[in-house]
Image (cartoon, rainbow, N blue to C red; front, side, top):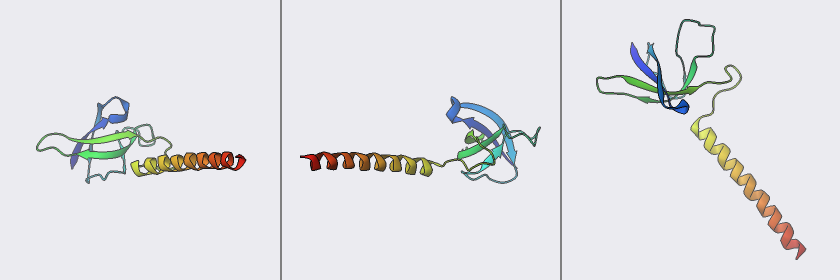
Length: 105
């Protein structure tokens, strides 16, 4: 069994519940903080990173998992791709505006 303490880094860097897992979790998976109400989705978190310690507590860096059952949470690569796509669209728009002004000259 593996014991972890959750660190809510997107909500003020505070520690949360301690969980015991039967397997080593992988970044990008989900973890349920409590097993008291198995039908509740309010305490499901997305694991972004794992911090292993030498003989002390192990930690999972987690963020709330909103939209359970609707879509997978965005990864860091998804956020970077969205930012790049937004920048490319803005550059395309500016290029079109410049070309229109040059055509008017």
